[in-house]
Length: 376
Image 1 (cartoon, rainbow, N blue to C red):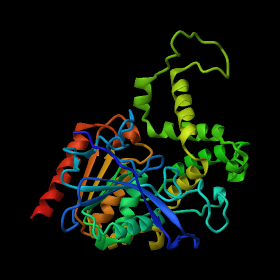
Image 2: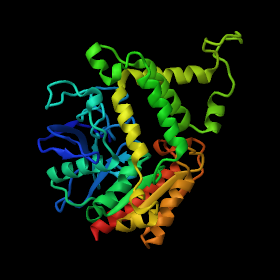
Image 3: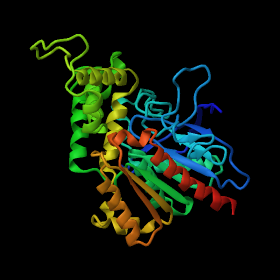
């Protein structure tokens, strides 16, 4: 059965206070829902998205080829997160460029496009905005919240900000904070964007241009970190593009991996917003729930009452298994119920998006348990 997706939007007039001290008023959140909310409103699952994803989590849009949601392998009728059982909600975060209010929209206080003036948002701000959406939908408590990568950080933050509203949390291919190396990768990508002559201090919309060169480089840097060395070697190795011999040039595209990265960069620059990229990578940098507890993650997670599923992948060097194990240890130190799996997969960080039978079976079994609890 094909799941049909329907984009929705909700307007919020009341200002949303942000961690920075700023606020956003008169904003919209784009979202989609799948499945049916049960009579006691207890079967809701919130899915949080990562950097370049959106509220379009699953299903397809009518009449649009290749419009599958970014986690369509995971969510849908009969899938691990079964929409015949659960009411699944995908929300596009504030500051994104896929429907929710962000830098491309008009600031109601000035009448001008926000551009670089859109306030910095954090993971905690996103969670607060998501909570408001749930309030509007009449959902007081989530059966589960789940996400991978940056989405996993949001799921973790939900259990700390709203512990009474979360029954279960799936934190996949994620971390309790970014390492210095990860922050460094984000900074290189941001520098590529802000030094693009077409960036114009973030107000490029007014000039009718897009800093595509910077976006291309940012995406190329990011994409390298999402793949494992094994996958890159298997897919591309040192192979030259078809029909080419070595040309002894510094500027032509000769290797297949070069062609692939250029393709990914070009595609990304056509649909993603540069200011959004800066905002979301900065939110990644800032996330650190242990910061308020002198770096003690166990103290930070003491507030959580949810039951957890954590999944990591052996070749994911961007969010390594060691980072997931830090969360597991902190939860066990607090005697919280936690299931942890480390999947031996060759795909690197992107593994959480792919169709690995062991991974999907694990998530299916975990959600089967949640369904059994709800039916009891």
